Amino acid sequence: MLGLASADDKSGNALYLSLSFGSLDISCVDHLPEELIAVTIQGLSFSMAMGIGPEGTFQRMQLSLQNLQIDDQLSASRCVGCLT
Image 1 (cartoon, helix red, strand yellow):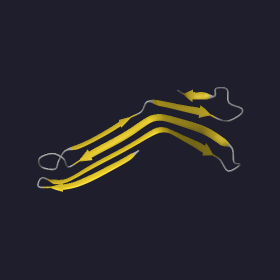
Image 2 (image 1 turned 135 degrees about the horizontal axis):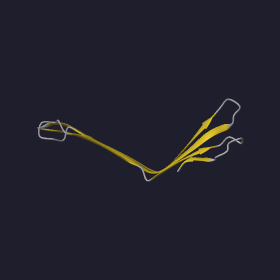
Image 3 (image 1 turned 90 degrees about the vertical axis):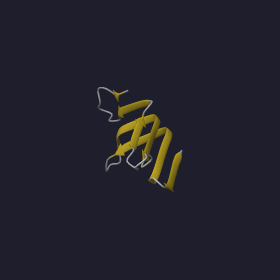
Image 4 (image 1 turned 120 degrees about the horizontal axis):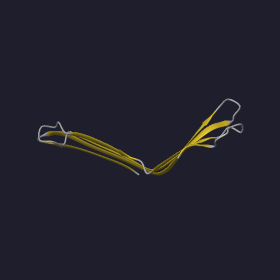
């Protein structure tokens, strides 16, 4: 989900940006192609607000993450799950 709002008022410019992902999967692949690492992110959300204060100086940024898993995909690996 992507949300973007912008407004102009007497106190200055206002901007609000919101991004949400239920699940995001990222793979790193080499030239062979062979998958080296797989990253799974669940419940990722990012929001940012700027210029909402009385003088347009207010800034806020928030990042939240529900679950992060990084897996080593190489066949010779001792440990498959690197970070959970």
